[in-house]
Amino acid sequence: MIPKKKYVDVQGVRLHYVDWEGDGPPVLLFHGDQRTSRSWDAVARRLHDQFRIIALDARGHGESEWSPRGYNTKDRVYDLIAFMDAVNLSDSMVVAHSTGAGVVAHVALLEPRLINKMFLIETLLVLDERFQEQASRRETDVRRFWPSQEEFLEYLKWHRATKIWDAEVIADVAAHEVRVVDGGQVESLWAPQTFNFDERKDDLYDLHETLPGCSVPTCFLMSAGRDEKSIDVLRRVSTEMQDASIVLFEGVGHNIYMEQPQIVSELIVDFLDGKDLPQKISV
Image (cartoon, rainbow, N blue to C red):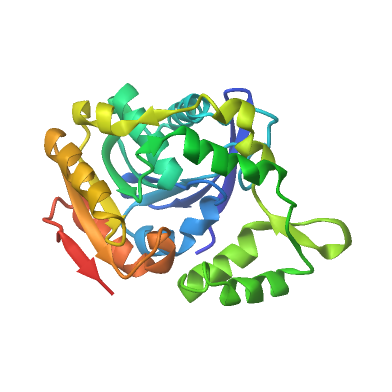
């Protein structure tokens, strides 16, 4: 199935999303930094027969507007709230990754009416000065171009960070997460402005302090390769939340849903169906 491309104007920007349609309950898929809605395609294909799947391009990513500013956590949170209200996604399940999962957690704390369950993958629980300084270097890094989509595809198959992605995901990213520029070259579909340090330097949070007050049922899917201290802290937080569980995934990196879309999709379905999830899985 080919999803429908749609747009909505919120918060002064035009946001793009893909609608996989379907008659089931709504599920919103939300990416992290340097990714787009289309990184979820392999998951969406496995879920759209049972759910109405919508995947959003955040501001400055994919085909959403690349505004000069508006990329701190507060802006992202209000963008997401406005989007969910605009497309009638109240009381929906949300699946999110990395910095996107951090944004979704803030939305659940601020507007729990919007989210009935959240499945958070490799959640960025802490934004500190060190993280923001490192991330902000991407704004001024030399922009990478590839001669063609075909060569970008070969690059993804070769690079150590991306060759571990599922082959279906690699093909999706090569097809949909780039745009053609001068001379037929392609570049990644995210704006350097998303890493502007003037916005990021004071954009700090620690969800360990606030998530215990969250009432939304939550599953945290985390790589078992994280350090034991981080996992122990997450265990403490999850026990203090009203309804939270953790699944540790052995043998995967940060982009779990792109490496193992089949297993992640099965976990999402089981979580939605209220089934008990394993504490640990491996590949």
